[in-house]
Image (cartoon, rainbow, N blue to C red; front, side, top):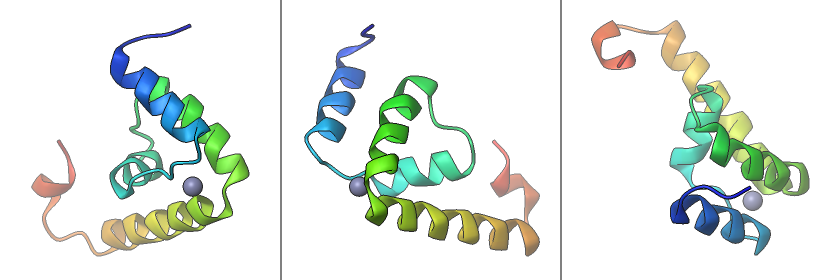
Amino acid sequence: MFFETAQGVYMSAYLAGEHATDDELELVAMDRLDPNRAGPLAIHLERCEFCRQRLAAEIRDIAALREGLRNPRQAET
Ligand SMILES: [Zn+2]
C-alpha cells in the first residue's frame, strides 16, 4: 500500500540504506512519528545498530528534558 510520493521516497530511502534523520528519531522517541513513516523506519532500525544507538540517545535526551522541564509551553504543542 502506498500513500503520498513523500512516503514512497521515505520507504525507498530506508531500503537503500539511508539513515533516519535526527528529526525523525526525535519524533520516534516522542512517539509522534507518522505511522506511515514509522513502519519503514522500524524495519530500518531492526537492521541498523547506528540508528538504534542514535534513537537511544534521543530517548535519553528527551527524558532528561522532561525531568528538567522549566517551560511547559515550549514542550507541548
Ligand atoms: Zn540507520
